[in-house]
Amino acid sequence: MARNVNVSWVLPTTRESGKPLNPADIAGVQLSLSADNVNWTVYDTFPPAVLTTVIPELDIGEWFVAGVVKDTAGRSSKAVVSSIVVPDETAPGNLASLVLTF
Amino acid sequence: MRKFLLALIFWSTFSYGQAVDLVATPSTGQAPLPVALTWTSTGVDACVKDGVSVPVAGSQNLTVNATTTYSIACTGGKNYSDISWTAPTQNTDGSTIPATGVGSLGGFRLYYSTNPATVETATPINLTKDLRTYRIVGQPNAVYYYKMTAYNTENVSSAFTGAVNNTINFVQVADTAPVTITAAATFSTTAPGVYNLVKKANGFILVYVGIVPLNTLCDITQTVNGYYAVPVSLVTWSGTVKPIVVVAQCSLH
Image 1: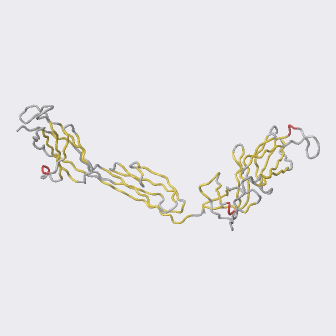
Image 2: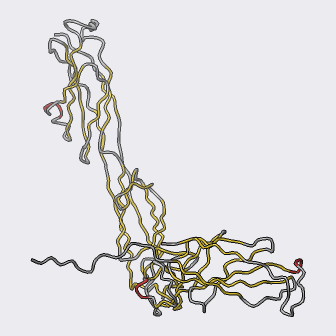
Image 3: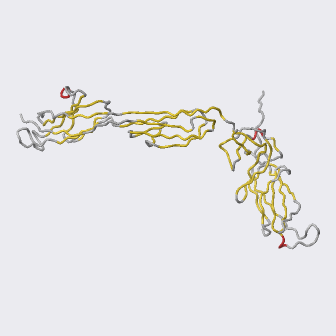
């Protein structure tokens, strides 16, 4: 059964160099989605003021979400990847067989 | 014996050069084949194409998946006659026919035949005194001759009216347009990747979930943005996500 997945993130306060990052220099966050952690599709890009989203109705299985921060100069952070397993909450399958004996 | 004076009036003479023409363009090709059916006609009143009433001229765009013969049938003219008459008001002696009671109008008899010499001996159609029109339906094509008499409550009949005639020319014409499918083209995958549709706020994205063999047949009825459903039973999954519907790039080849 498909499930909605909540995604939230915290914006960085420093650059890779360790020096402070001016919040005004952040252009936004790009989320990508993958079903195998190899092949990725850009899901959406969010402005700095948005820190959560919901990915609706993901099918059963393990999903991977990657987040990349982009600055106003077009530079991108390394991707941070998280995964979640949408559990299979369907009922068990039928008995393979049912035998009656005396 | 006093007799009625009776006048008989009517008309219908039909003669057309009926024809209908049904054309399929193109008339041959590979499935699924877009075909334009067009039809024109002359001298007809109504048409039926493949069991459905249609205008006497028109067109229709179809997608043909198998060899099919389309047909149209049209009819022109009428196979019935409308007859009208005026009732007599006087007897042959000039006296007025009473509105009611003895000697008043009793009814009419309508005689018709394709032979003018035998009209008066044909079996009449008995018509009540209140009728002034009558329709004879289902007449085969021919020239028909008609006469009438009126009679009173004493069953005294008028003389026959003079004969009138009309021509029934009811014509049915038909045409067919075969469309031949020479070979069914394969609508199948052109790339191995298959995708899951994932919703987002303003649409959806396609997320890669596995592969299918090239030239896997695609379901032409399930499509989104140029991608078509393929059988999940043929998918080699790349992860643990195994949707019940996946799509792939497909084309006709």
